[in-house]
Amino acid sequence: MKSILAGKKILFGITGSIAVYKAAEWVRELTKAEVEVTVVMTEAAARFISSLTFAALSGRRVYTGMFEADAGEEMTHISLAGECDLCIIAPATAQSMAKFANGFADDLLSTLVLACKAKVLVFPAMNSNMYCHAATQANLTRLQEYGYGIIEPEQGKLACGDEGIGRLVAWETAREKILSALAPQDLADRTVLITAGPTWESFDPARHLSNRSSGKMGYGLARAAGRRGARVILVSGPSAIDPPPGVEIVNIINAREMHDAVMEHYKSADVVVMAAAVSDYRPAKTMQQKIKKGGKLLDLELVPNPDILKKLGQKKKKAKRPLLIGFAAESSHHIEEGRRKLKEKNLDLIVINDIIGKDTGFAADTNQISLIDRDYGLEKLPLLSKEVCADMILDKVVKLLQ
Ligand SMILES: Cc1cc2nc3c(=O)[nH]c(=O)nc-3n(C[C@H](O)[C@H](O)[C@H](O)COP(=O)(O)O)c2cc1C
Image (cartoon, rainbow, N blue to C red):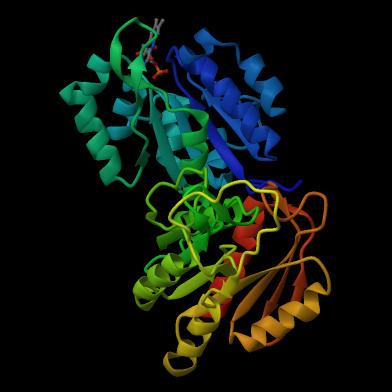
């Protein structure tokens, strides 16, 4: 299945830290995600792990020396620097950072970094005294001034036995930083309000009516919008997922609370994406005490919840904003239902979810969606990861905003 990173070109600089072995795992993850990874190692790095390991993991030649090129070959330090979408240095030693900060070009990697026009992300890893030393900190400040992304190392037990700051960040953190660095900043200066997850409609202190929404799609959209530079407000029903970094989260339980939170925040939003699976109905009464078990039939009277999307659609008729994106979870007649909702609720875009398919809908990591825009243009997407779906929905949002 297509990865969100597929086809990207990353120049991966590796320097002589004890954390080099972790870089092997990162190269493997990137290659699995169909990234073209070109590894450049310093001489010190190659003393920790052989370049053969990285050549095998990346499936490509590994570069180590400035003067390796055969006659007639391009100048490696210029050609490699010009070819990448992103350059990452992981692990980054104190020594190499000092070189980058001072414009040294005395080995292949430092020369490449100097020649590189793409964004450079630096992932330091070292003993905490080395990291906290004023010289290292001054170098980091200077690198930031030059526009390099610095990813602060983690706290914890270090290879030297000390405890403190200096551990190379976990792959999950690195992946997020890489994705953000590669994302187009086409939602910068925009506020995107996203709803996610289910709602819980209580009928006694122990029980509620709900649905099988996990929040994965809405949280994925929030994460993707944040990477693309948006200010993100996430109004979320109960979900087990950790909120994405940098997102303003508003936790709610039931549909009426979601309604109130959306009405409070939508005015500051350029885009509202209603990805939550809001319960259409709620119990007419919530019992103060738990309903006792008995042999008899139990009637549960349900009343409709407010239709948040429809209300926003009506408000949009006058104000012409925000851009409104709805979701329709359908089990049959998907397209007809989608078109009907798009019109009825005055939406700019509707995302139709097939909830019957094997790998689609609630809780799955994949989704098969169709998009219908306000001009009734229909786009049917293949089975994709929810992460890729989120980006494709936002591509459409960006077009509609123009
Ligand atoms: C066993 C060992 C572990 C090392 N680990 C680190 C480290 O984690 N971070 C660091 O900045 N330097 C570390 N060093 C020191 C660097 O290898 C040294 O400064 C080297 O000159 C770095 O060269 P480079 O930046 O060109 O790769 C370590 C050295 C040894 C012998």
